[in-house]
Length: 242
Ligand code: URA
Image (tube, rainbow, N blue to C red; front, top):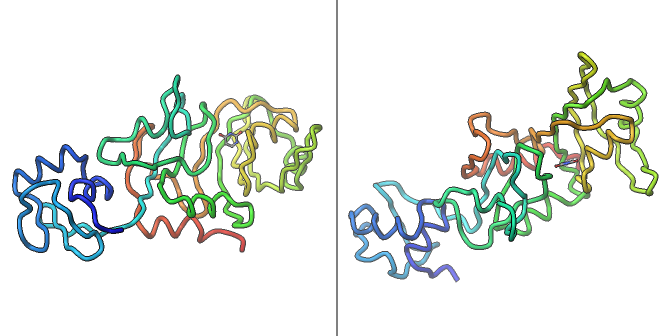
């Protein structure tokens, strides 16, 4: 199962695209068990063989986890006929088969998005049972009232019967606008926007800042993405309530 082509291995680990792998091999930058690779399509065993690129050993991970600062106007989907998706805008060296966004952000929402090929991880992160909180910064078109805050902190039921669990809210009102930090543990369809609408405010801007204890990397500009470390992966679950 871990037998694969060298170029596929390198692209699967986010090192480079398959095309770039061929160039690296040609330039004698890739070693397999201490010997320069002769071709980029040779078979290697990802778990057993030691692969080096430019003198650095490539540590094998079965799945990859990517952090993206999702920009506006891009869909959090794997593919779409009409619109650009978060997968389309990944840099070539991070693209591989089977990637999908773990969870959804609306087209006009920005911020922290995790992209992976690990279905179990995504399921766990999104399951309400895991109690992974997500922190959002929302700009509202009006002053949030103390009674509105209290209602959201208590948990609300919309007229259509949708129930939202208690949220953690802190806010600042200036010039008939409110900047709110809202933490929720579920992530139902348009949850933040619908929650605030229920207490009389429209969300003008929405950005996800944190998942569990994992913050969006401030160094990632909108649309940029990078591999996550194992430590960052653990942070996703380190702040949960269970
Ligand atoms: N809640 C929303 O309303 N939209 C998002 O994109 C995420 C949470």
